[in-house]
Image 1: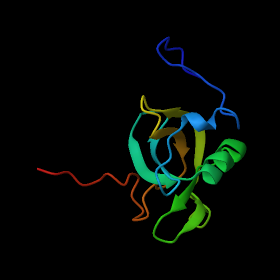
Image 2: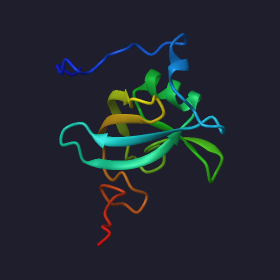
Image 3: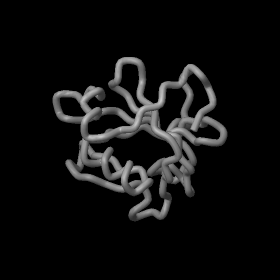
Length: 119
């Protein structure tokens, strides 16, 4: 838990999940960030069920738009994301997951999905 006085901490419950703004498809973007060094690892989509499962299990779970399927990060690769903290932005429409990343975060087997730079 953060000791920053500017951080507002709420307990996510059934009653206050309505603060979060999911898009028309019922999805919200989720950015995974290393909880130790703040490296941005990946971005994926969550629906309400994957968010609830993430909160319950402590392992990051997402919704694949291309496969139209729920997935737990690391379920097939072993590269799990153990969630330490979850934040949401000022507009309540993006999530930030602070995670302990086991292995690679990217499906290309790189540590981060953000390994290319635009010049």
